[in-house]
Image 1 (cartoon, rainbow, N blue to C red):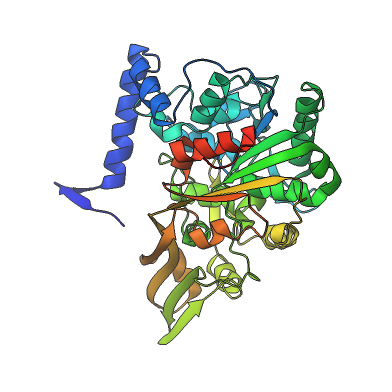
Image 2: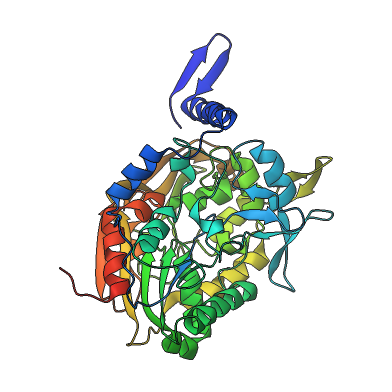
Length: 446
């Protein structure tokens, strides 16, 4: 809920102060046209052990797969970046990112009259995942940097963009098994192998990108075995996310962009297959299952993964959104078609059969308070869950993915590494990058 200050007749929250401060810093640095500070680059490089001199040796090509929210999305016609934006964030988010789920095509499609958008593919897929807001400068940079540290380290060691280093940005509103994403990953792997004499690739995924890889493995097992040498999965919600995803359905969550209103994010999520795919796995034998508790008409209720879909559905029965540009009110309940698709795709990735020849390395965050449960007070109707105050119950994890989900990959891992880090910062940690280098060089633990 956060601390609130009273300034005359206005109440100001810590969130509002933080967002305002970020906007102020962005405006100052953009007005000065200051490039990324050299000192910041040095400190970042030192923290991840960047090698000062390129080392050109024969190694496997590397393909990077981002997670949900981890690809720049732009207008396909004009090239305008619409995710992530800090300035006028809600305006662009509503007009370019919202959509409607089409059950026939199993695709989230643009609203009527809305421009077609998609992931930024330039720079061999690296531009769309390196830094999610390239216009930002230090210190705002730290909020939007993504694969940059990993890309810098690999390039310093001899990997070359478009030759031995590639990215696969994807439209993260779509299903993790969306055919265009599967095709893009397959084509990128094929290209990487052709440019490196048929050498197998190493995959490095983050967050939901790991579920994309799992889906690819399930759909193309023979191709996977013939083309993948190693896979490093970082912060993967193998069994789903915790209470943050439950909160996204009930009251909204900003998807990692503090400039986005929670209700705007919720309006996107209710039509986005990928968000439903992050619900906790119902069939997984949880030791600490994500939960929702409340007292309904004097009766204590505890909802678990197998039981909370119907109460969430009832809570959203009368949910609406105001569509741009004229703010027409449109019903937007729980999307049963999206939920049905997610049950099929989550079942597909639940029991992966990793080929013995593929070396898998699992990295997970820990030591951070990670929401596991939403605890509400007294209610008389489930609809009250969309507005009523709640208390979070936390467990160990990276602040987003509980450790229990992140380590339950169902595969044989060459190594498992727990890093004290938040979900996004896992990609910047020296321990993570050291393990990546160990994997791509195929060397034993030192």
